[in-house]
Image (cartoon, rainbow, N blue to C red; front, side, top):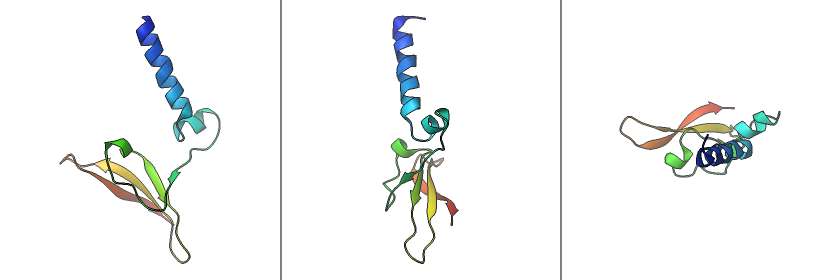
Length: 82
């Protein structure tokens, strides 16, 4: 393996270790959701990310996932609600 390829692999592995979803599981913990009071604007940066919105008194908490449509637009889809 060339030094440049090795450096890229090591960089990718470090990113995976730091990742809140995958990294936690690798370290033997539970994956965590990104918690927000409101959804950020859907974009490629959030594609396949899950975001939890805690419910206020009398309202259910909701988990969303960001997905890209066939028309190449991004939007948040409700994944689960409490």
